[in-house]
Image (cartoon, rainbow, N blue to C red; front, side, top):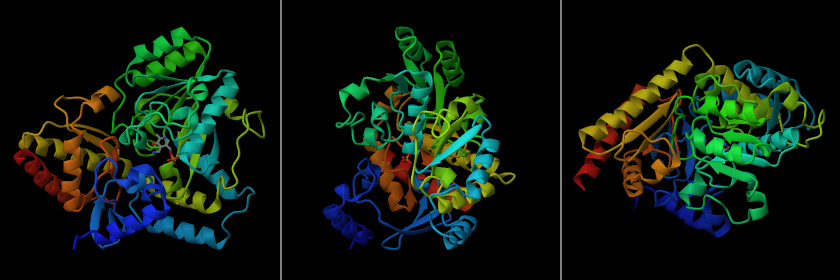
Amino acid sequence: MSKTSKSADLFAKAQQKIPGGVNSPVRAFAGVGGTPLFIDRADGAYIFDADGNAYIDYVGSWGPMILGHNHAAIRDAVIHAAQQGLSFGAPTAMEITMAELVSELVPSMEMVRMVSSGTEATMSAIRLARGFTGRDNILKFEGCYHGHADCLLVKAGSGALTLGQPSSPGVPADFAKHTLTATYNDLDSVREAFTAQPDQIACIIVEPVAGNMNCIPPVAGFLQGLREICDEFGALLILDEVMTGFRVAQGGAQAYYNVKPDITTLGKIIGGGMPVGAFGGRRDVMEFIAPTGPVYQAGTLSGNPVAMAAGHACLTVLIEEGNEKRLANTTKRLANGFKALADKHGIPLAVNQVGAMFGFFFIDQDSVTCYDDVTKCDIERFKRFFNLMLDKGVYLAPSAYEACFTSLAHNDKEIDATLEAADFAFATLAAE
Ligand code: PMP
């Protein structure tokens, strides 16, 4: 019997009632083949599948679990909040505390509105930018993913790329035509779009470190260049920090790269594992949303008390002295370790790492800076590597187009074990 037979049984059963057996596409292991693991529980750096196997986890629920799984501070905060009632549909003091904390950590977010997912955050930010500027068009980058709102599912990354459908059926061409796309890390392509339509583009939305076409940091001057172009043409700059917020640095990628957006979107870590997103920014822009302004935006469960409690506990622990540096050091050690081992076995590999996110590419070039580079990677080799690592008890992001994440629960023991597994996996690839 296979060591994951329970997962296989569950997957077969799930497919009868749930499209593809999963509630979000990349979970289906579409990018790596085989059966997705069904997870029973998770603790610290480890997840445990339905068959009881343990894995060192570099997915971290796709980003939120930056303290490690099942962290006592978050668990206790959630239990306490749940005992007071699950949802009121009325304001609570914790929403103010969270808005203040977020503003303090990310000062460009002068005002903050909570929502329930990253998709809601970006969708609302786009509507706000359009309403504020009175312009219809937006500009995004090929291979960047900003959730699954219609206007943003154009040349998108993440699961859309993994499934080979970066632009989705169901998005009317009439909507999609308002989404212009440019090349990540290529300011000329952005300037070209603005020169063609100097007064029609409401905003640029960008992942300040792209994490949905694997992991691609901005080249020097790219984000500053976007800021300048927005200022020149009267457009707003939206930094989508759903993934990078509190992960690349405590103040997000905007602190790390010293760029000030008009609007920031957050998700993942801000909810500590509960469904939360947020958008915020310049006071004059944020006051344009209802009820102070004309741009409508709402949510029955927005600012949910249990979710706020989880997010608050997560951020409170995360910002403790030394944690930011420790996360970055752990991640750097891992990324450099992968590179050194690949070199040792003669496997061409490029690695990118910023803060607590990293990516690796089976490609024979030193740097990977845009979507076109990513498409040149050896996807079959990635699949093989992923499955060899999984078999050794390491759970990497199950797609060559996703970034990997570390947490504060990833200590030397876990990094050593991961590198040992990688040594074996690269050696196996070299022998094939
Ligand atoms: N923006 C970015 C940068 C993301 O990485 C994601 C999700 N991976 C989203 C938006 C959408 O967030 P959610 O899945 O919570 O809707």
